[in-house]
Amino acid sequence: MYNTHRAFRFALLTLSLALAGCAGTQPVAWSGLSSSAQLKPDAESQHMPYRYTPVVDWKKYSAAIIEPVVIYQGADNQFGDMAQEDRQALASYMQKRFSERLASRFTPATSASAHTLKIKLTLAGAETTTPVLGTFTKFDLAGGPYNIVQSIRGKEGMLNGSVSYAVEIYDAASNQLLSAWVAKQYPNAMNVSASFGALSAAEVGIDKGADQLVEMLN
Image 1 (cartoon, one colour):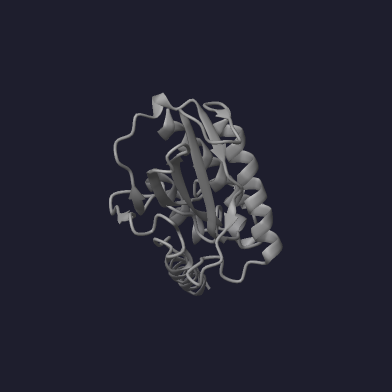
Image 2: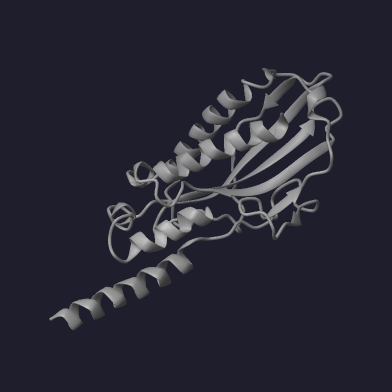
C-alpha cells in the first residue's frame, strides 16, 4: 500500500511538473504593435522579453495622456480561448489601475502639449487560473514544493493565471517613440488569494505592471 501511494504521488508530481512546463506562454513582439520593428529581445529580463528603452530624461515630463487600452486582435494574440467578455473585463481593469497609478506621478492630460507623455497600453494575452487546482497546488505534495521553488525564483506558479501586454510611450507633442516594451506579469507562485477567481491572477499581474511602469518613469 505504501509503495502504491508513493508511486501515485510520484506520478502526480511528474504530471504536474509537465503541465506546469507547458502551461505558460511567453510574450512575443506582436506584429500589430506600432513599435514592433524597434523591439529587441532581452534574454536577461524575466518580465520584459522584448523592449526598446533608450535613455530618456523622464523628469522633464509632468503630464500624461493615457489612451484607452486596446485589446490586441492580431492572429498572434495570446488569449487562447478566453471569452471576449473576460478580455474586456481585463482591459477595463487595466485602464483603471494604470490610470490610478500614473496619476500619482503625472497630471492627467487630454491634449498634446510640452512636457506631456502619451502612453498606449495594449492587452495582448492572458491566462486564467485553473479553478480549484490553482489553489490546491499551493498545498498538495505535488504542487507545493514546485510552487515554493518558483516563488523563490520569482517565476510563474503552477496552473496560475497571468497577463501579457505592451506599453508604448511617446512624446505627446512630437509623437516620437520614447520607450516601448512587451511584458508578462503574474502573482507570486505562493500567493493564495490570487488563485481564487479565474481572472484574479491576471488582475494581480496588471497591478504589478502598473507599479512597475510608475517606478520606471520616476
